[in-house]
Length: 318
Picture 1 (cartoon, rainbow, N blue to C red):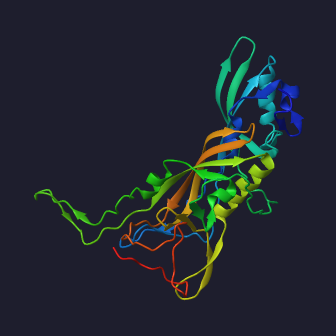
Picture 2 (picture 1 turned 90 degrees about the vertical axis):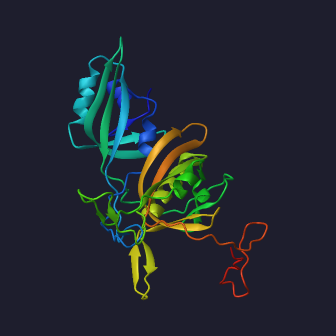
Picture 3 (picture 1 turned 90 degrees about the horizontal axis):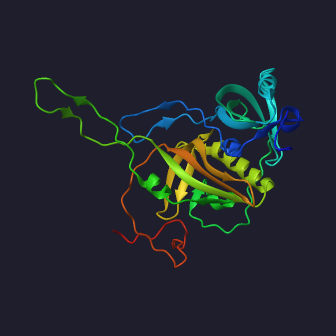
């Protein structure tokens, strides 16, 4: 079909008899992964100490599938893609341009009158140089209860899906202490003085909804920005610094988890009749430990009741 895809300003259907096939959009909307930050793993502490003074996004592979409806146009199309490193791919329906380079051809199939092929392209530009942050907007009524740095995910038009809570609550692997296993002795000698936990990857299953693409891209880009931005913080000695560690809060059990953004995967994407984007957001919980249970006095609307100075919760004991 015409006006589905323009490469370097040319309609590929008109120029090469090429159409993009269903499923291409899903690859394009997923966030690129982050590059793994440097870290120190202290055996006597939970989790790891990450250097989050900067967080950088990695390149991302995008698989696009094309159908060819003109004989011998396949070779011309490939020649065009390989005549220079980067090409501008403009998708009118998405209202967005992506600068991609050809990486590989994944498959090639021939039918009576058509040919189909999948190509892998690399997106080396995960952020737009001229991006100006805009706060997310949402007019769709959604449940609340999951916050990123104090902002509920519903503000981005995101509904957190079933299966997320069990991912959050699952205990991470235990760090292995000194273990001595001698050949001529039963069993082993293990340093069992303390138990510390490793970091863990947590899959947050999300559904983003938007009435149009202007709203979708605004919320989409705002979420990526907020996941990777630097925030001013103060250490125990009053020294101010910036890092990209996030705080993920779950209202159901009133717990904050220090974390940073790792990756994103599209599960499904529907760009018609309102946008529905189901995706899995992977966060690295940098330190995780289930604490002792506390019972706090709350009102009927679920808000904690504080003392007159509004600083201390009223602990009801065990």
